[in-house]
Image 1 (cartoon, helix red, strand yellow):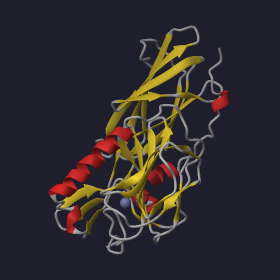
Image 2 (tube, rainbow, N blue to C red; image 1 turned 180 degrees about the vertical axis):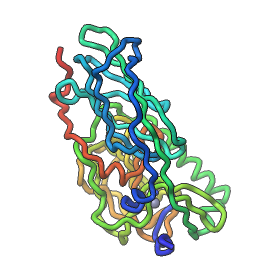
Image 3 (cartoon, rainbow, N blue to C red; image 1 turned 45 degrees about the horizontal axis):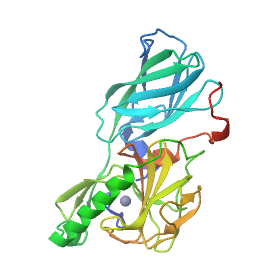
Image 4 (cartoon, helix red, strand yellow; image 1 turned 90 degrees about the vertical axis):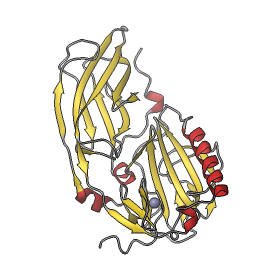
Length: 318
Ligand SMILES: [Zn+2]
């Protein structure tokens, strides 16, 4: 019932309060004191924000090792995480949990290199809970559920283009501080919704929809580099930003694009105007967040408290 009024929506993502209410959240699990380098250590402090992790959530990790480190990497759910040195002995990184991740306990394995060059590691298990996402029925033009051979060719070319754009992201952090909403408007469809198009084609909404009319200014959620700014078949006029550390943000169905590929942008900068281009049932903004190939809940990212980058002061002590 809740979603019958959702008529302006796109193919791929959310809504924070409802989603939070629907989530059956997990909690932080027990800690193992066995270092990945085989060294026993008991004074590592490993914190995750949010404290309750579910499938589809981004996670901000803060790690304080017992000694000063030269570098810190981590392994989490098959992903390699490169931490950035924060203040004091603390290291920070953004990570995430895919929608497909089953509830359970998963290890974060940390590998540090001390200033003297020796290994110092740690391992901590986190419990991933199960988020329950809604299902909605939608109707779109047939060309989006049963594309012609010519349209399939365009879709294939788009996929190649996206694959290429997504594979050249920068590991260095470009984002700084809290992520800001791209528009000042209510959301109309939440991340994780399972969608049935024209009674048959199924997909999962991998972003967050905002209820805005055509022509509403759309702003960058954080600092980054424009890696894609062009029309695509399903996405319509589309802008993709690389925020570093494997994190991208996407803005779909725009009526106009106001940035160029390769351009650096800061949080709040105009990227384009909202619209209804591509597979959209009406004007709205679809925003998505992608980390290392995994779509994450944008509402959860927007609610994270994050530090400003201290890029100039980030070099570890020599
Ligand atoms: Zn959407």
